[in-house]
Image (cartoon, rainbow, N blue to C red; front, side, top):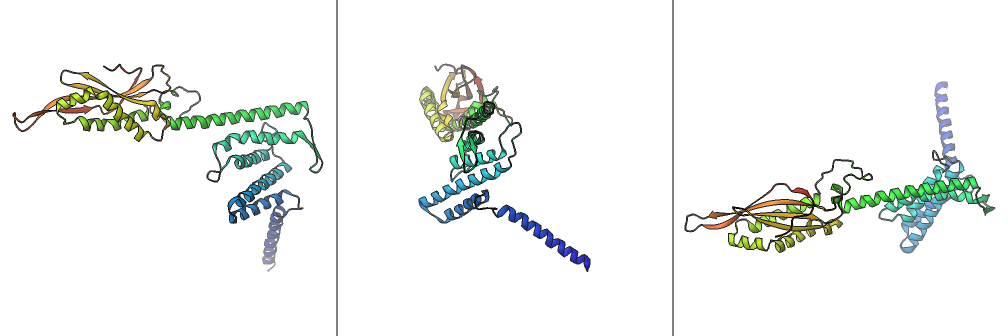
Length: 335
């Protein structure tokens, strides 16, 4: 019985201690405290949920201000420093909230600009107290001591440099999304662009252009009377150019680099017929000053079809390479 009572009293004592700990955290010791600001921010967001129009935005705006003020107050009471600097961890957290508040949106709270400005804002938040002296109720501006000025300049400059590197990452990422062909050549030996997986050296979009163009050309030439095919080949520059522009607009619509590809044909005579080379030419930046292009060759030959010798007609037979070839340099001149 005594053991049971001890266990019951032990549970009550534990619950009482747990309640006291939670109460200490949640109940403000006085009205003017960081908990009050946090509660006001939560209350503002709850109200903004039920509000509409510009009132909703105004209430949410103050909710953000209360959250930033409360977080900054709480994290600076007993600051934990970022290793190697005098920047409090609280300034990093507050800087993130300020950056989200300033550069976020309802559709996407965390945007590239949020991440870019985060280090710089955190450094400025760390530096601001160095220009203020006094208490919360009696504060005035001051000029930091020379040794403090050096620390502030180094911290802010380092954070701005970090922001620049983060922005450089987002710029490069955007370039490689809009101009994926740059990965195959221009950034092949780049010190800044590191591949996390094996990349194909042949530009994917250049291959797509030829793969989509080939069946269209084959359809227009295959089993067509030989005289019409020869006329088609005489007009190949205009015909293939128009077909190529259509293929580029259809298949590369989501890429900015669609303006940097050009399609041209090259026609050459052979003993038995013709060779039609389909070229997708890259006119964008390249590590090779002469650029590069992709080629897919098609062999066109006349064949006789018909049931007997009197009804036989000559039509074209076309066969194209299965893969595209990447060639560095300027395309051969058109004849």
